[in-house]
Image (cartoon, rainbow, N blue to C red):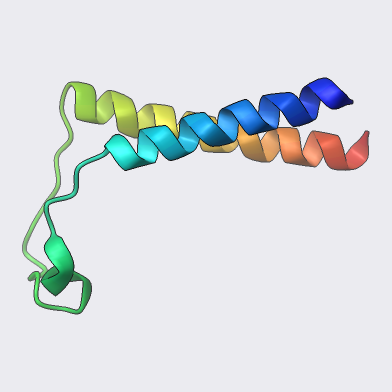
Length: 71
């Protein structure tokens, strides 16, 4: 039971680190509608790896949370 919580802490830290490493060049003006809808983001190389790793880590974190709930 304790190893699940420890693994959740490690996955959570890795998720935060991976999400913070992703670069989004939108700025504050795009947050409030000034960015324009015509931009298309295509990920390549390391950026694609970070995105896919973040998605996989979040799925694993969610699965561990459900597992911890039932155990």
